[in-house]
Image 1 (spheres, rainbow, N blue to C red):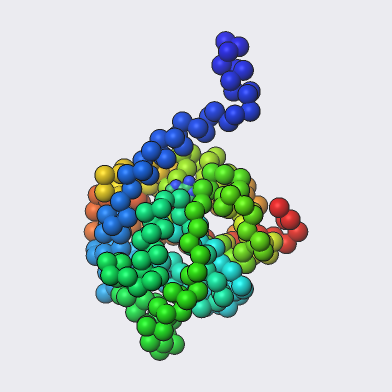
Image 2 (image 1 turned 120 degrees about the vertical axis):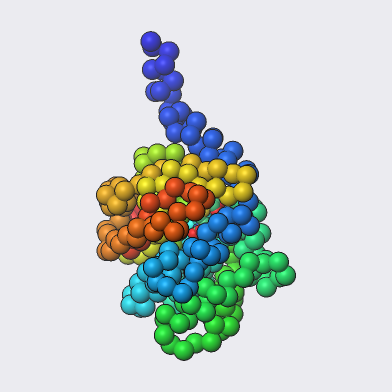
Length: 283
Ligand SMILES: C[S@@+](CC[C@H](N)C(=O)[O-])C[C@H]1O[C@@H](n2cnc3c(N)ncnc32)[C@H](O)[C@@H]1O
């Protein structure tokens, strides 16, 4: 009757709220170490062949940043979680890298790595592999030192807010990176598009966006947490980027081989997108 209609028209966006509340509760149980074990140790982080998923992700990032076109003062990484692999090729091209995450436990995990504290996750196999595929003969310790120096801010973020950092980023970022975050925090495709629009406001017009994400995934595990994910197809990624005002430059995808379907999620594959925010979109 009229009662339901008046709630829908109240302007409080009730449709999105229930799914988001369930997600928020799920993330209260997110265990960074379990998440790292599930995704960033073998079999997924196996550097013996480019057929494995982690080397595929690192290759996409290395090739895209190798062009030299994506560079500037600041790069912001949205939903960094407890990981830094996504920043290894990017960090050569920016003076400052800003990492962000919703959860304090993830920001703390990152902080331990930046400060080189005992108990921090060991990213050295990733750093060595990236130095190898970048092919400049750079000692991996140099890259590690450079990323640690440039990763000076680790900020809280909520991509569901129109102002994801709680205040505008001034000046705006020259590039935006986000890996496996937006689809993993959005109850549906509409929410994914809104989140993408929100984080797009952190990027200057003309700036580049680099996204990695899950295809066809409905959940993933992180210790006691079972997080729902909006299952995306490649076409959904294309449409979402267009709807959020980005111009697509490149879209690639990877099919998860059976040996990497370990039960920690139900992911079918991974997408890699390079897009650009058109000049003249002042928002
Ligand atoms: C699947 S993890 C991705 C982590 C990392 N970027 C990677 O590539 O493995 C998703 C991340 O989104 C974060 N997150 C949860 N809710 C969020 C929100 N509302 N806004 C931004 N990030 C959120 C989680 O804490 C988690 O670190």
